[in-house]
Image (tube, rainbow, N blue to C red; front, side, top):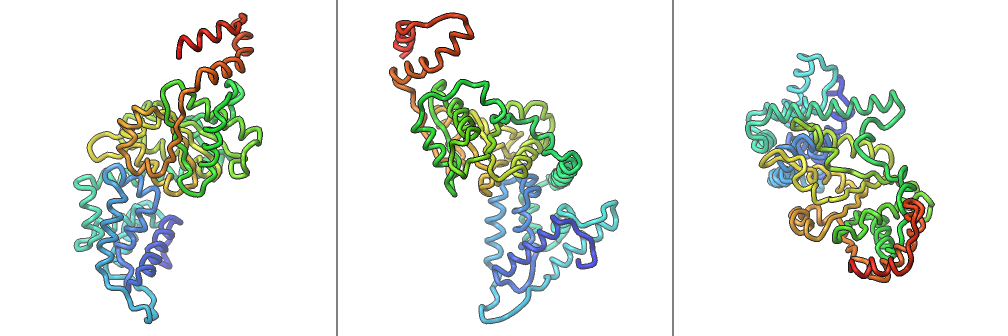
Length: 379
């Protein structure tokens, strides 16, 4: 393809396929190497995940490649294109020539694999898709075009794009909230988890009303005041709301586009950003349209695995056991932090600290006896 124009994405895929071939010391670059490289492509991953778990496909492809004998370690060689891989590229080039496209892109290479008659890569991919090949290709093309348009808009406007309308930047609103009183232990533990290299996604679990969201607002205040470790300085915390994301998503693919738009936008803005998901158990099943369809939790797994975005989640014990615990992949990537109810004395201390704000707002005064009675009566 030296004399054929190709997109940066296509060039990267072919380079990854070659790298995969070399790592396995295979003599020929095969469609299976390309398929493995495709699974690492965010557009292919998102499109396939609507119909099938990409990680399962990855395991199946690796099983096939293990059946290929490697070149001995003492033999110097340079991988060559297999006949089937050459056909994939030929199919892609012919498709570009017959269309209005001017460069070979990811969808052309995928279509080239699907057109193969006798190939494990074609068989496995077709087996994943069933009779949904056309729908899959449509989603893949849309995801690629969506990413291109998002980058073009960002370049023209000099801003991250429309994804900001779908999230709330907590750094811009923290002054409107009451300051966090107490919870030093839980806040310190949250900061420790966020600063770790791996499994750096805190999960706050506690009964309703114990102050899980208030804890995140307290973290944001510390970030804005610069009272956090260097790893967190300058971080922006974006709150993700499943209800907002699901609103108006009439067609399959709308929800996936929104998730991808937000995650890519946050990731491109900074590697230091944090995503806060209240009621995180709603991730499991959100956006799924039927059996085999992906939900929000599956869509976020590539970003969790990459580690470029850190997540903070919150949920109750009941919802954690009922929904969140079903997703073993999510549990592995989050560090649970229990948020227990404050004691009676801690509650009195919290109320006394915020007492002036409420007295000013309501135009009344609260005496110590009233505060003590209210706390003890609700304990």
